[in-house]
Length: 331
Ligand code: TYM
Image (cartoon, rainbow, N blue to C red; front, side, top):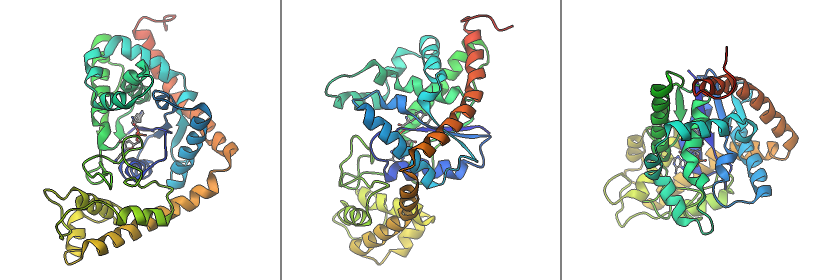
């Protein structure tokens, strides 16, 4: 089973990214044949950014992935812009298998374009086609992502099917893998909105590299409700989110958390969540501190990953190009 997923090197990675996605990448690395993980710097250029900052954040994200447990000996970890087939295939899919109307329906485009101050780029509109190209270029069977990528994944499947029916079977139609618990971690200050780098509040977002004190403060001031019971339910989005976080972090069911804290006050419950999250992230933070400064080593890992990625993507994209009638005919 071939596994592929991508993560943006924008902003600071938060607990939603960690729980919804990175945790799955690590679990799945031995199940993939191979498991391929891509730091998607081309996607990051679709909103305002600064080039030197992008490079810095690419290293930050790569080091976080390694610190979380990705092992370059057991998976392929590479940088998207190192492999030209991603951009090439984007055009091929956009021109022949992507409906403009489908891109127009993408909710992330609507959300992101609404907050862009200077330029709503055509690249932002094309973002889901680039994501489809990432996935399809590797003959991917399974794509681990959080809930917010559901619509993009559905479009990638649609694009693969359209291309296949027009040019004969070329691409595998991939399946998504969205975790049952932790697929949509919410903003602690605004629990009706997902935790996110761009849209959520600083106080409501726990970053993977936050100091223990900051984590405690954010969780203790998380918005709850006027009730007093630690259980999920109507009007209890804040407490439900904390229950979900604690369940994932402790590796138990949400029911178990509700039973365990049935007699607790919100304050005590929050203290327990804060302590558990601090302990959960501590080993990642320690490992990150060891790895981050050796940029030459990070580059060496990415170069090795790119060589392996290229060997997979090049023949798949070449076959698609040939079927489209482009380039010199393949004998
Ligand atoms: P990005 O970098 O925004 O997010 C990385 C992963 O984190 C998940 N995620 C969350 N999970 C749970 N709760 C949250 N609040 C939360 N916020 C984010 C995302 O679902 C994602 O899995 N478009 C992708 C990057 C991408 C990609 C790909 C993914 C590019 N090409 C190919 C899969 C396959 C993205 O926005 O990632």
